Length: 130
Image (cartoon, rainbow, N blue to C red):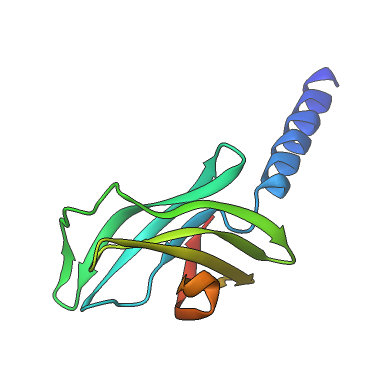
């Protein structure tokens, strides 16, 4: 009986910790940018969320980009209802922009903005796992 109770308690703790994971956490596939796309893993970094490039691809398949391991999503903090604000790095021009994210289920709209957030370029990312 004690074994069953322990197993139920452990299952409950696991389910609670999984439920507490934020919707932004996980592996996301970017849209192609300058002919390449990536898989970005987003996880907690302090009180925010950061995303690191884990794998990179071109139309020819996977390749070992010099950007693997670099942070693409920087210090995103939740602002409510699936929205996040922070910064994003664009590898193709090595610039950091004001970042805005909106998540709807397994789809993310990520925007990189200038001029105080008035002019933005966006991508749609798809969640692969998490």
